[in-house]
Length: 110
Image 1 (cartoon, rainbow, N blue to C red):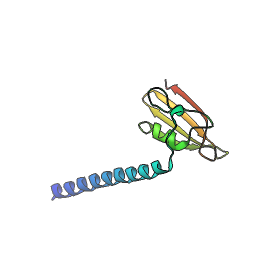
Image 2: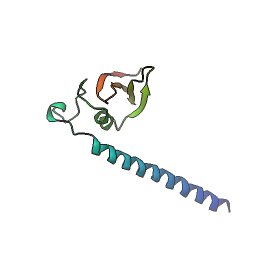
Image 3: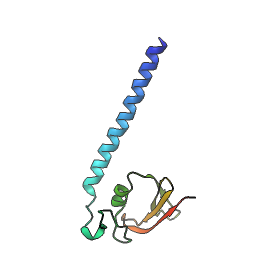
Image 4: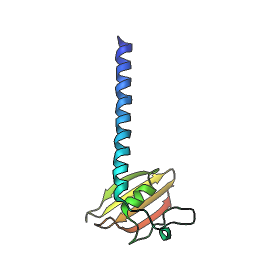
């Protein structure tokens, strides 16, 4: 009986995780329809997005940082931002009310 309950719980957990992955893939796909592809002058020679204040959009930053762990933040003035970290690398991005990058900073975590 314990083995059956354990097996059922295991299957439920796996199903829930797959559901989350599918939901995130759907949300990412929907978001990518609304996000314009960066122009050639917005990409460096290796094809990576160049962060430009006043030009780069939040959705473009989110795609560029998709392999990093990011948390959305808001300050007391309701300024929108992202704090991202991957290993010892950290990045902070601030956006205006239209989702356009206003400031950014990259650094290392000690």
